[in-house]
Length: 416
Image 1 (cartoon, rainbow, N blue to C red):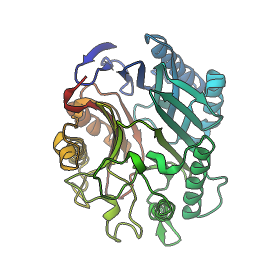
Image 2: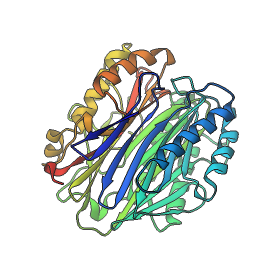
Image 3: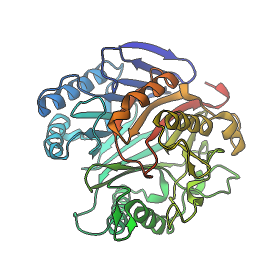
Image 4: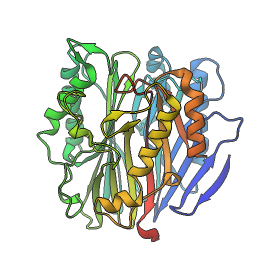
């Protein structure tokens, strides 16, 4: 790998050589006395499953050991090709991390590179205080901020309808957050991995039943609180990804933020090209999806923008039906418009904004494995050198072929 400085955000991207797997790379952000590292790893070898896991863990350890200061992995998502490998994978990861097991999602979304698994992980180093609160929960505190990572939350059993299971996992995430003095009102980002997401269930679609449960749960909450950007008057929901997996399982994850700092603000972003998801008509879902297209977290002069799962939708309609190349182009254009300086100014935060070059990493979900080369070609042309995970996953509409999410780091008015 070669290291390239990124002047705009002090982000350092390590880009893979042509002979390395595509799901490989890292982005490093230095903020005062704290460093945050995002990295993607997939094994090169195609041997036995345990061998591939050990290779991935060895690569992850090597990346961490090459940093200037010790770092802890705080949250990770493990993409698995086969559901039957999860138990062994979990055991090997727990043996590796011992008392410092990160909050982990295991999702059955086959990596497009052909490996048995791929890993996206976030690590933190420097003066941050990292606490591991048992399975599913890690907190990171520094500079008057407390980030709460909650991951791998599932229903207690396989019984129950899509609505009942969805309602249960939201309640269980709330319980986990309360155990460390947080609450769901403080959540800025949500991930939902839902098997059979567009499948029929008792005359309804499973995704629609998820939206019904989410609407009921969110109806009891008031997001943003004192952290909401001054003057913001719109609907306030976390950024979110709702994406399909193999099987019929349900796994959820969230990120919450606590702080008393006066220079920290939250701004939910909507896309000028798209109807807000929470305003969709009933033809898409009886209860509209309750999420924002992105959530911007303003930390002094820095902005972290968590980009929701984004697809080829203009207004509220799917466009370029049947053409995965054009859908990928439209999806990236939607992201570009969403995080642009013009859009930040339009929504009340002039001086903020980012471009595709400010993305630290992305995930690309592809409905059909055979479309991988076409999707990857567009992504590499538009976002060259960006650490990317490509995984096979169903998208929340039958006519959508690709979905992309990510996170961008930028600075207010270019200030240090």
